[in-house]
Length: 143
Image (cartoon, one colour):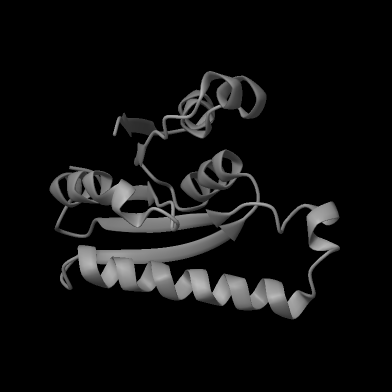
């Protein structure tokens, strides 16, 4: 049983994380453990990208994503399960690793996206980066 499990969610494809959430529910210590659902909004954190958007637009997008994450948590996590939620901006792998460290996570459960080989070479794999750099165990599920 794990005390603090992080499950990164792609809010554009929330059902993509269903199996990760189900596994987290099975693995979390029901006596004091917690599941942390998080999502990352890529792009806005970049000064170049951010320069094209008013601060109010970025805040509005952040709020909308937060509501979607709350709705997903309400749908997928039973009320008796301790949970926390967070929305981040920036590079997904970096944000996941930082959140895991900040919350003293002992497990990250994430689903790997299957991207083309060109995307993988140019962009890298978020799940690969998290596995390499996280200070805790990482379980990567294939779709």
